[in-house]
Amino acid sequence: MSSTASPSIAFVAADSEPARQALDELRGRYDAVAPDEAEIIVPLGGDGFMLETLHHFVGGRARIFGMHRGSVGFLMNPYRADGLIERIAAAQPVVLHPLAMVAEDVAGICHRAIAFNEVSLLRESRQAAKLRVSVDGVVRLDELMADGILLSTPVGSTAYNLSAHGPIIPLRAGILALTPISAFRPRRWRGALLAHDARVRIDALESDKRPVSAVADFTEVRDIVAVEIRENRDIAMTLLFDRDANLEERVFKEQFLT
Image (tube, rainbow, N blue to C red):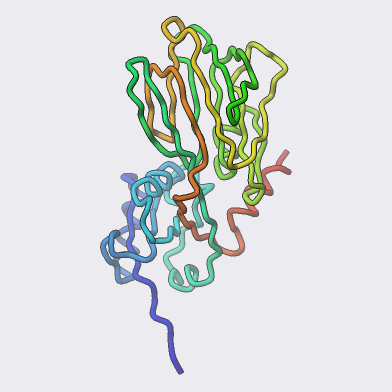
């Protein structure tokens, strides 16, 4: 009879006391390796720390099995110290592809970043942003006056996108959500659903009078004049979830909450 060796595991934790206590407990119960040597990385914290973990280990081969020891834990599994190896072995994988953002600022410098949740453009001053929106080289909105606009992935659709009254997207839908933030003109435009391979360009009009910033997850670029966004299928990060609370089901159920 042959047995399958347990995967090598690394634990990382947010700075909060619950996360640090969990880190000490898990390291006392399981053999751990350095994160750059691990097949499985277990972040302990909330959704913000999960996003930090995804960005930190992007391009690596390790799979991510997060456990909730923070505030919001939508991207996390429940915390339990018992049976971790068995939970990981039975977990369901979800593959995430980030958005790639290229933002040009007023000095002509291009800034690159990726986002697993969303790329958002936000006004920097009391003046509403004035934006032109193009999709696949075609101008779709000559002028949008709003607090901003965002392009969301399916996994990000339950975050800022939902707060901005954007649609929740099932993970396998193959679409992105383009959602205005407090639109002033046109008032009745509620956004659009785009194919996952759409190329979106947003130009900041009158940027000297109406400065705009661009944010990819937690990377911010100030005073931009144009942003180009597309999904980057060359990057794939695998998250693992307990079968009784997998991410796909969580996202789907969000559509029926009242």
